Length: 171
Image 1 (cartoon, rainbow, N blue to C red):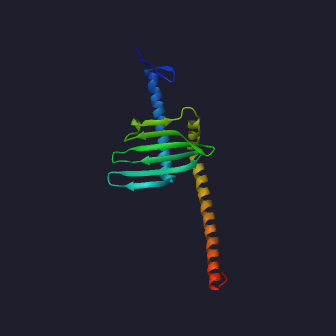
Image 2: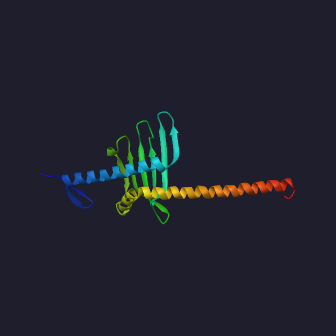
């Protein structure tokens, strides 16, 4: 006799339930591995504390392909990891994915998985367009740095003029 379970108002046998579990776990691993690698390579480190047996590293990338990614890793010597994904719609972040695992990702606890939206389709598109999005992000950063240098140059020039004007009692 095959045991049946009800999931989302659907009656499933054990084989179907096992397939759903494997599919969901594969998706979680794919997403988490993508996010961790992206944050390691291109994320901003917000916190990096090493207190002996307590290590805490927090990284983020804001508005990467319409998502905000955050990881919080190594909270104790035994592990303790979180990955958060916020979908940015109209500038307002909405948490669509949150997962916690201690040592093995296969033993994770999925704390949030937005079943209602099409964010999974969009994040898979972001994964495919990762290199293009990284180039856009790096170009934006270069432009911002260039603008910052230009503003600094104007400010230095103004400061030099004001110092000269003060020396000549014009100010």
